[in-house]
Length: 371
Image 1 (cartoon, rainbow, N blue to C red):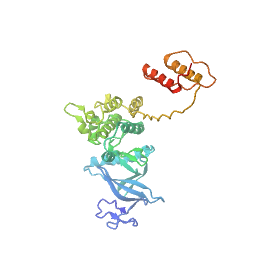
Image 2: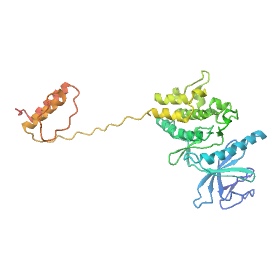
Image 3: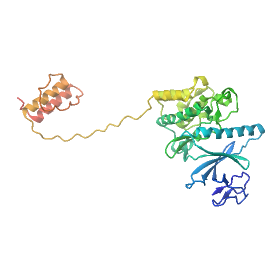
Image 4: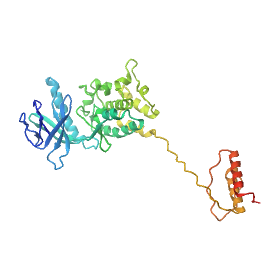
């Protein structure tokens, strides 16, 4: 199927072998190569479509983002234009990271702006949570180890994502986590950090300073922390905060308490006062690396004892073995030298009576002919 990108088209669905919409006559291929198949999302600044690249023999899937602001007012629309353009510029740089979708194209067609980016085949973490239930502590350890380097990469290039949340983190077919949707991202270069701007992001995950339009690198760390507690509790971060007492209560909502190490890290990621929060992704990673994630104890496999072999020993061999047992457990003298390699030490009995019993068993086994 080919989907018409004309927002005013009343019948946008078309067969995949036509080049112009049968309903409105609009051209269906963008740049004569990208064919939209179906809409997959819509936000305040645009629509998103699943598409294929007809210019390649394999016709690989891709994603088309169409700039289509829903807001009214000249200033708001102009701001939206700037953000959409900025997303394209930033994706061109950030898309070099294997956990950020690559930008494939950016252009204008029929007076609308478009960007085309790599398609990530997988579920987002909100869908994974709904399907599989709350995340375990081990999963959160792994998530932080996987995503903090991505934030580190973005921040090193002066980019604040500003909308870290489960819906914007995908797990691809290779189980790799990918950060998507840089439409709300902001450049932190120059004076941008110190200038109050538009508050953008999803309220449940947004840091207090970002709500006031002053996003900083630590704002992304707060949002990642809020994402973690949502995945751990299965509840909205709003439900995990006691506004009357100005405190987080997410620990009370866990089925299994966290280890002290991870608990401290998440608490520091979620501090409302920015200067008391982790300032960089590196800081969080350093603390993570100093902690040991909770792992299940190793399983001890007890092998059945081999049946005793009936070997006839001479009295002198019995005496030597008996002396070795005494030497191991009673601190007796060394056994007499023997050119044959001595057997490996036997694990000590739990107490003296157990040792006496073992000696008696040896005597009974070989007889009282050791004189």
